[in-house]
Length: 372
Image (cartoon, rainbow, N blue to C red; front, side, top):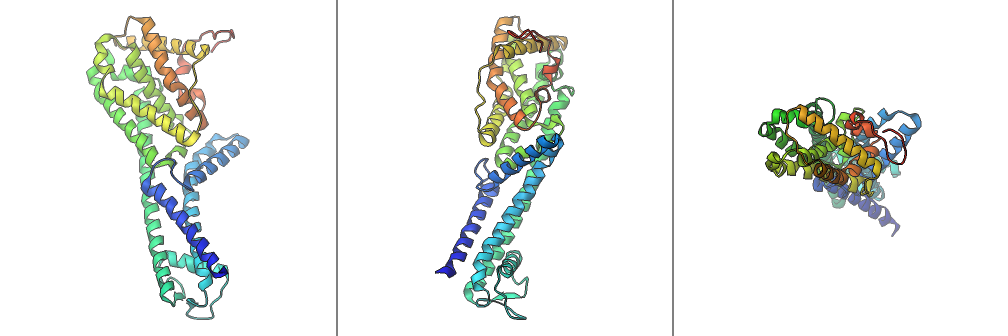
């Protein structure tokens, strides 16, 4: 009976690893990994605590690559241990050393298991029985398959990361390197040429849809955090959502076609869904809260600045100021808490995620008498 304990535990361990590889690499939906998601979160939390103690936020830039290394090591070591547990009882009987007496210690089993996972016949230890030969063959197939899948997965992850960074940089450049949605719209629709900027807006909407799916296919992307805030996905999403909020609340009635267009709808839905997915899968916190008086005053001042910027760019804005304010506050309240929660979870400051706040008029916060 005891002879079967090790093989059973070994088979279960290998099955667990293979299931995790399947869910992470092949099934590829955020939040489905058995080991990978927990390991990634553990590495992130550990590195964030270290960064907080050292006072160096740049350490978080190593989190994504460290998770990749930790995941590969976890899969490799676990597979080797599982195979070793299966091999160990067969040493000296079904598996022997062709040159000398066969040791039966566990380290030898681990060596034989690792060799069989890499290539059949990679050591002096060979299978003698039909069952051992089948075990070596299966180990070889598993090892080769996992290595191939993980290499392909890594290439796809870094390809998706490059695409995400390109999107963030594109938004930063279109805003004139200010990170302000009003500047982005002013450059897209200068002199009220709405049709001219529609193509660029459609491209941004398509890029955000790709970014949303990339985070769903490769959840590890969430933990790639760069020191430069311009590469923060929360910042790019905020600019996109703020741009849509301004289009729908500030532009004149002549731009009604743009407000209802597919590009604007897709940009809004994709950016908001991206933030919701990151919050639901990685943060597990409620981000819905009503804006307080300070938020409302700040957003109204932000809207005034945006209107002035659009007018200077020759873009026609609505004359119904009250309705404009109500619409903007309504839209902003839908996404602002969510975006800032995702941004703060990645250790970014509020002004890093929303640079337009720094440019907003100084106002008196209600009930506090302090400026903000």
